[in-house]
Amino acid sequence: MNKKKIKQLKNAISTAVLGGLVVILPSALLVTVFNWLYEKVTLLISPITKMFWADPGFLANILTVLIILTVSFMLGVVVKTRSGNFFYNIIDKGFLSKIPGYSLIRDIVLQFIGKKKNSFSAVALVNIFNNSTRMTGFVTDRSTSGIVTVFVPTGPNPTSGNIYHLPADKVKELKCSVDVAMKSIIACGGGTSGFIDKV
Image (cartoon, rainbow, N blue to C red; front, top):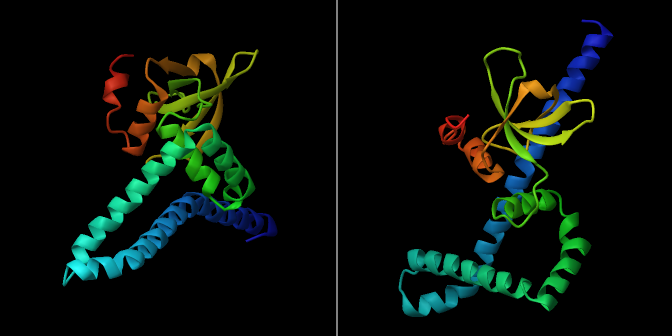
């Protein structure tokens, strides 16, 4: 194996590893934070639960989840106020955004609950291989020369994928919202008949 092929192999391996980390790290961070929060709340309420139940395990778990959901709800209400939003922005930009994977998780959550403006202008079926195969993609840009830029995500993780620059006749826009298409990608294609049948 010559040096060029060795270099290409190293680049391919490093790219694959980095791509895997981009997928894994945000999910791992979310799970880690939730587990840490769950353990802290369980430890905090354990003296109270032991006072009322001899074996508080199951009820303590339910109570812990309820407390986390209640606190999340209350924080959500506070953040909607002017002063709460002001302090949240300070914490978000000054501290939270520096945590690896936090910004990606935040953007995904905001996008799915409809609080973040989506950069995708339309959902489309794209003809990449110049045959009968079609892929679900999102139009991200259009050039004056008639080239359409499309992001084709991978399922079930829509945060990774490929970018294609295609002639306009290879891109068939669909009458479908980005949210609906995104949910079908997460479901590995489930529900696509609802918007493909309308083409």
